[in-house]
Length: 55
Image 1 (tube, rainbow, N blue to C red):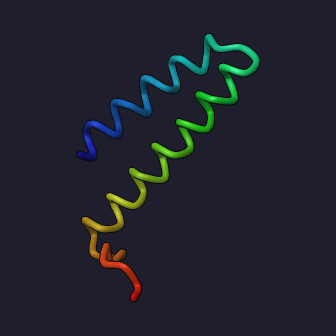
Image 2 (spheres, rainbow, N blue to C red):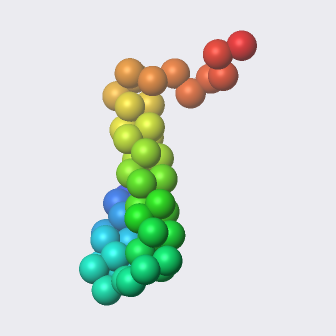
Image 3 (cartoon, rainbow, N blue to C red):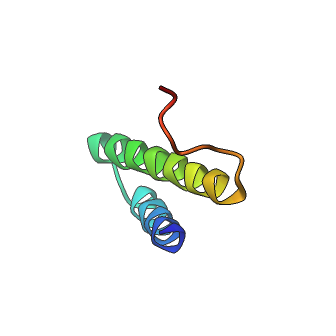
């Protein structure tokens, strides 16, 4: 899963370099989401994040 997220982030970075206007904002939002998902996956793997819901 983490490799797929890393690939997705690299692809989004490449798209962002050539994007304009509305497309740039959309790609930036997707990139931010992918980075957050990767950070959560890393934290879960390292044991610093509990994936179970808090209730």
